[in-house]
Length: 172
Image 1: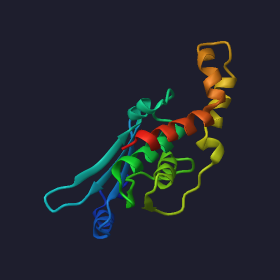
Image 2: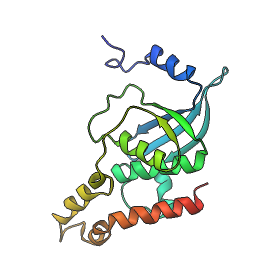
Image 3: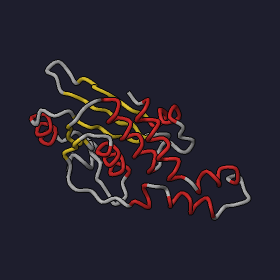
Image 4: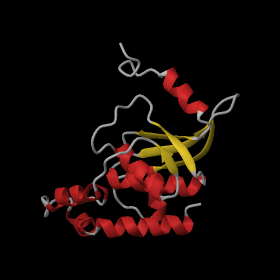
């Protein structure tokens, strides 16, 4: 049985990442948010260079979910701005990456924020990045508990751009 199926560390892959000498970009998703960290290897233990949490996006004006696709992108962008790291290697853990994985959007955010992430090419959809799937969901539910949010969701691309500008100005 592969180590991935048992959720165990693949030490050959880990050693290869560590030998690169680059900080690792570690991305995880909890039940409530996306989390990203830049981690550097040291002989006496790993050191966290910088971290960003989905909940941090509220400080920059994000009023939506902290674990959806746009939030993953924004959290990646925030981590890039906060950490000051210019080059990193992706540490995806034991995850198998699938189409539209939140990790792809996180990586896009980190790359747009200035980090050269060493990872395979990854497919992303600009429509999904800018929340058209979220808008479609809310638009089909007008008149119920989402009606107060519906106007903001229609302009989610503008909300994302506004948060990016806030991060650029205050993200350090």
